Length: 107
Image 1: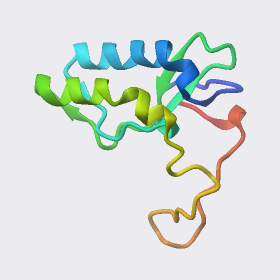
Image 2: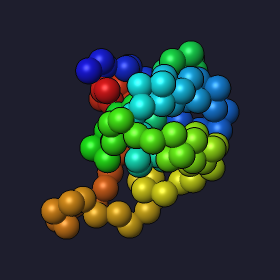
Image 3: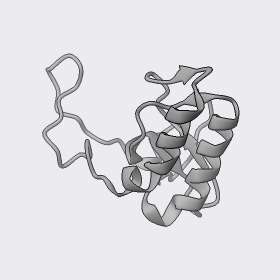
Image 4: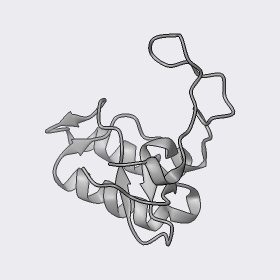
């Protein structure tokens, strides 16, 4: 786990650095399984990215799902699903989803 100060969610402009992280995961046969821009954090300078949610990950994944996840990465970074503007509720159904400041993120 690492603290990344002033990080932001991955966006299409960060595709190269995000693709590098996914490439490394896929080399290890790890399928993230929940690829969306809210699960990718990018440093303020755009030079590094990390994954912040591996709850849906699959280990020893087959090549086909890994390829599919890689192919959908750009679309995932374009999607704004589950951003703070959406009506997502947390898993307990009690609190609205809110985003903490970038300085509070850690992976």
